[in-house]
Length: 144
Image (tube, rainbow, N blue to C red):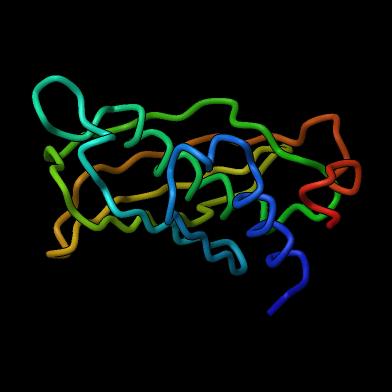
């Protein structure tokens, strides 16, 4: 596996927010990423289904890491992300798949989709990602 992809996966797991989502996994390859997460009641809103913040986290991270796989110098940032909800999620195992659609004018366009354990589409979206000012090598989670 490419060392850059391994470092991105490490960066994903070392991010402080990941402490709120135990058991999450990220696999990165060229222009693609796969985020897996077991959904528990802790991620529910008051109507006993997965909160929109978790949809966003899965979709944004899958698209983000797909785009980040193509940028080896700088930490990239989410410029915008649009979500289309398809169905509610209760306790289930989810996979979010991200893929870069294009790279133009310094912007990475990436789409992502979430699928439940039955293979049904749960949500999808598309984002724009741009290079930020921080070099990847300045981030302890990327270097170590």
